[in-house]
Length: 264
Image (cartoon, rainbow, N blue to C red):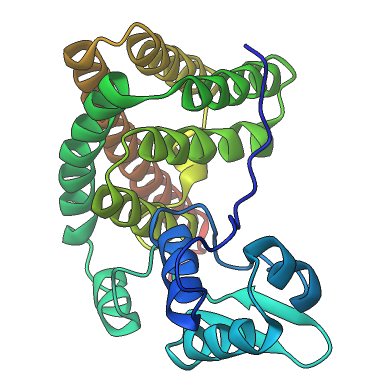
């Protein structure tokens, strides 16, 4: 299929007011098209692409900045603020991080979310969504074959994000991104625990292949089952990794004790 270039910022076709500009940028943020850190085009270019005057554009950008959606850097342009996927407040994140029980709840929560998301993606993915999923899977296979551990981790998150986008549900999209953000920050567990062995990496690749294949086949039930099986495997892998780590710590303490000189 031939790709067509689309302009994110379409000309305003109504009253050409600041409210219309605000609405268009809001939708791009809400739908996850514009992400945190993305830089908007310069004022001259953006006003031309939106077909509005520069004073109207400035008014709209100021309104979005006042609401904390955009950040303007003097002489450095206008950027999307760090708002995408910010479902949990810093206080809640800190609270979650202090209690081990949250890990199990997180996996349980994500199991249901990932299942619903994969099912919706199988039914709703557009040709462009499917192209993106294919590109990410190709990159994942390449990283896996080349033994590129960090790249494989990165494509893992990219794939799940792309599936979230293909589901075309705004609430799901932002909820999932919040979950992935907490995971990337190591709030629940370190992702390297799950990728700790070649065997685990083989299993994870096969699971991602199964999710991808079901979505591409437009089989919602298979996609849901594959996504939930993936989360079930991660839950077991985390428990095993944590248990192995605890056993290792206990063995080390025993060895240290035995090596101590006997007391008089």
